[in-house]
Image (tube, rainbow, N blue to C red; front, side, top):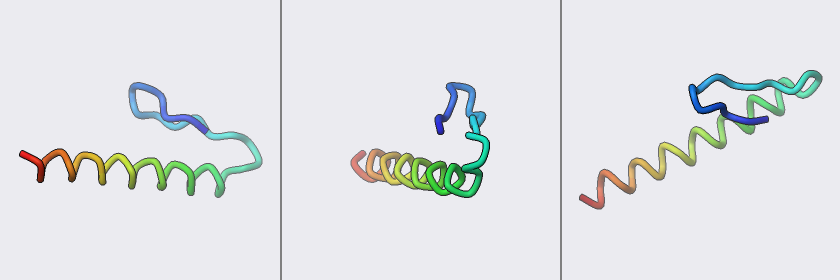
Length: 41
């Protein structure tokens, strides 16, 4: 499961729900990082 540079998801066949969960975790971490960056200013 990877996020490509243009934002599209590469889904592994047979692990769809697991891939979605991993994607959600990555997005959550990314938003947390951006939140920290904006509050640090």
